View 1 (cartoon, rainbow, N blue to C red):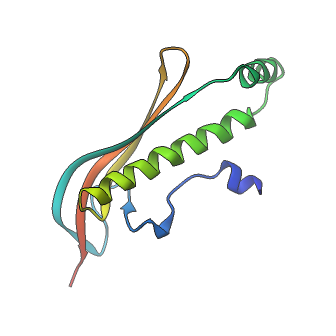
View 2 (cartoon, helix red, strand yellow; view 1 turned 90 degrees about the vertical axis):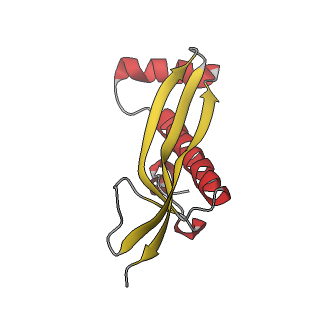
Length: 123
């Protein structure tokens, strides 16, 4: 797998739900606001990654293993956000954001959240 695929994130355009960080979408109008939706996942740390990260932090540089894990975690949270939006009848998520926190010192919680809506083309 290429480094771009390993470390890139974002939305699968074939998912049928447009996810944006803006309040509106140019060329579309909001027909109906459904409400808040979120996708949540918690990833535990394993000993190997903690030791590797600790050693790498002493020498400096990117922690590629942890970066890749965080990208995968964010993508999973996004997938769950899209699933919840579809289940509630939406075709868009407006004002999407990520929240990342430590979960009881055993892992990382990633939440993707936003406002589910139905959008339609102008015209």
